[in-house]
Length: 452
Image 1 (cartoon, rainbow, N blue to C red):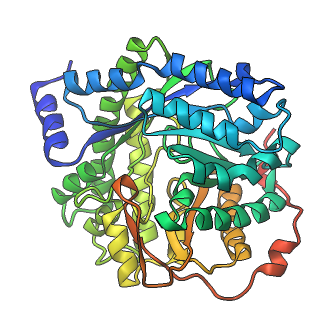
Image 2: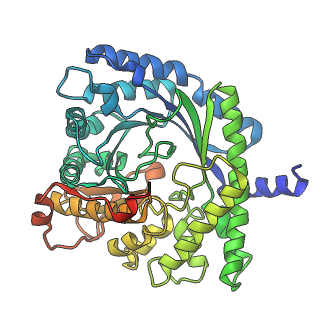
Image 3: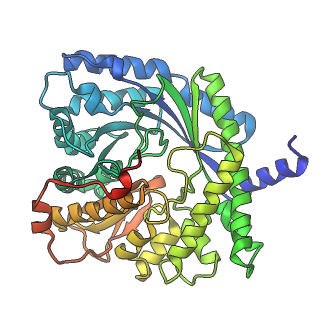
């Protein structure tokens, strides 16, 4: 039974503390759309997406209006296109990205994810075609998001794919240089990618998923921040308990929205992702939560410990609230999308090396970080390799989303707008990793992969 106080508390969180459902994402299987004729395959893709998701936005708006819960984004994820396009006789998969773009716009969604390849152990010809198509595909479309999984705890790290992705990120930035490299904001390189992630840019509909599902991502950095203001100076076990209880309430709201959307769209309910996903708005920052624990500035000594506590307490609270927690579920640290992270980076407290250390204890990884436009592709690949190693060894999902904007140097600022925000250009190490990346091959899976 929900009490009057709980209802009033939730209303207050929505009205004053930036609580929202960050996204309703419909996952759609496109395996039935495979066809030797690429034009016919693209027609099937457009028809299936628009048929399944035609009411997604309308239903999201209905729920938002009826329940008074803000739903910021409505999105679609699809089967990794490298799997769907493999039978098609074509050298470029850009036409598939354009079909996704048209379908997503027809449905009115914010983003559509799944221009993706899973290459953690090796690459098929279809995988190579998709990866080579990414720069043109992301420059020719508006709402398509792309991801490539280059490693896993079970398979190790595909260093040939890592080398390719450094080059792809550079080319994508160059093709969208007039828009501050926004193409790179729609491109994620994963290790241990999950099949039910509702958050862009890394969402895709896994091959092990149902025909269509509804996944919901909730977010509440502002709610957690305000809750911690009530326990100033308290021991860390009290802090952890406060975060856990707050995450419980946030997740319950997400579960309600997910179940309602699932029923109205006649679509299976997948998961609730309870990640703390910040926005550039003041009062909606993960960095400010860490500072509320007693740090003068995010990035200083103690930041990793504070983030570890936060991430663990969020997961515990969510698991109490729902038996369908999935996706990434933790704390995100995207620099350009977090007002506190931006301030810390500009102050020089938050560096690329510190962010890498923080990714050992939180969700995802080096996210939405602007670096100098002249950064060599091999350096970008080396950064990807480092982050993939963190994920592989620790059995967790990690990712890299870098923006090497041409013409930008350390101290400059890029402006992407909306939820993507803005970011100061951060320095990278100048020493070369060329010979390291040129080796190629595969970094073998760690000993902890042998669990059977």
